[in-house]
Length: 167
Image (tube, rainbow, N blue to C red; front, side):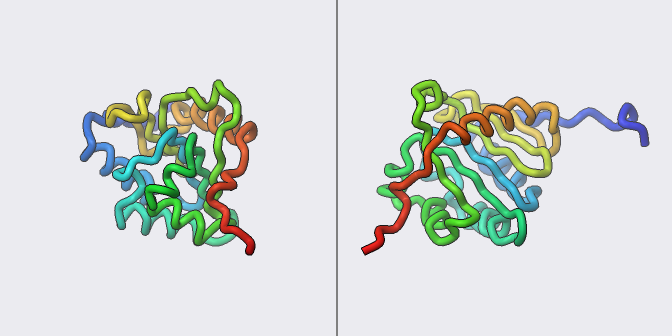
């Protein structure tokens, strides 16, 4: 099959909380070893359900090359809220990596997204609203988000608020 014979990737529309949760879970199930999450705030209904956490745990423990990278504007707030994804990051600190933006341009970025190593993505232009788009496999549409994430990741600092105290 020539590349020109392949059907165009299907873009899925997210138009509410249930659609958002279902797409997030579907993307996590399709990921193999790597996931990148940019989430300005970590609401209690995101990455907090048992099925999502099972998939995140599976990815984080997938062996060599396994990595979940998470950028949060306020990781301390997620810790105070006892978010289960933060608990997973504390249990698996070598594969669930959390960083916090330090530059103002990154701290004011208001969108959220999930990227997978299978080429999947979920993009919410306004992180607080369950409206956006995504695809299970569309590397061309994922590429600008991947580039943004990589640049923000390089500028961000390790989330020291999540590290256990050495007493």
